[in-house]
Every structure is written in C-alpha cells, then in structure tokens.
Amino acid sequence: MYSRQVNGSLLEIVQGDITKQEDVEAVVNAANALLMPGGGVAGAIHRAAGPELMEECRPLAPISPGEAVLTRAYNLPNKYIIHCLGPVYGQDQPADKLLANCYRKAMQLAAQKGIQTIAFPALSTGAFGYPLQEAAQIAISTVLQELDLQEKVRLARFVLFSEKDQEVHRKVLARQK
Image (cartoon, rainbow, N blue to C red; front, side, top):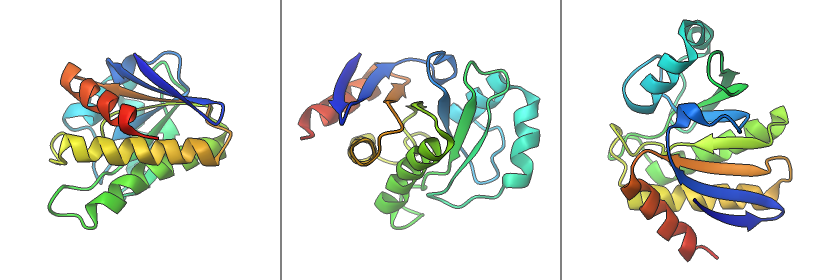
C-alpha cells in the first residue's frame, strides 16, 4: 500500500478487488451509460451487489460521460455505490476534462452525502481505452485537489486490479507535489 496525507485526509493506492473494500462507505463503479451490468468493474460490482442494484439504476439512466449518480450498495460490504461514466478515449471529448469530472463529481457526491471513505477503480482504462499513465495522472491530481478543498472525505483509496496498474498510480502519486 502507498499513501499520502492531504489536508488531514489520506489518499491510498492498493492492489485488490473493488468489491471487497469492507472498510469504506462508498465504492465507485466504472459504469456504462445505462448503469447496467457489463464487463470489468461494472460487471463485478453488479454481480456482488445483486439484482436489486439493477432495479435501482434503471430509472437513473442514461447518464453522460463525466456524470456520477449514487445508489445503495445492497450485498456489497459498503453503504453506497457512486456510478461514474468515464469517457471513451478518442471518442468523448474533451476526454481529460470528462475523466476529471468523474472523480470530482464522485468526491462531491460523497461529501454531500456525508461519506468519509471512498474507493475508486481506474476509470475508463479498461474497455474505454484511456491510456493508463494519462488516466492515473488525471485521477490522482483531481482527487488530491478535492481532498485539499473539502474536509468531509477522510480517505480516498485507489483499488487497482493489477500490480502494473498499482505501480503506475504509485509513481504518479510520488511525482505529485
């Protein structure tokens, strides 16, 4: 695990399974526009949460790239899921601003709801094709900014599936001021 203190809060980078973060109140879903089960993170979260999640998501969809919505977490060990639709790289523009908006809006939703602990995957880096290095830079800088601006969220954790993803995020965090 790698971490950094920011304005009394903690940013962590770990390798693991986003559906097994028992010590956080909210996990972030790398959602599709219809908020339905799919592959990758969205599929794993929907499978772990159970069919009730799909029913709650249905009237909230569709969402646009850069948007975020909140639902209950059902069978996950968390209270909430924040669903973010990241940009498809090379298609949704401006991709960098849309990706930053995902992280910013997730942090703002968490703060509004009184959520103090949140876990993120690497949004848009799977099937949506966002280059990992660039996505990690945007994600970490945006979350660090949000932690510096507000005092509600006390822990923001990046939960990365592979060792390579964790290492890229760790190096990006090490270069941040």
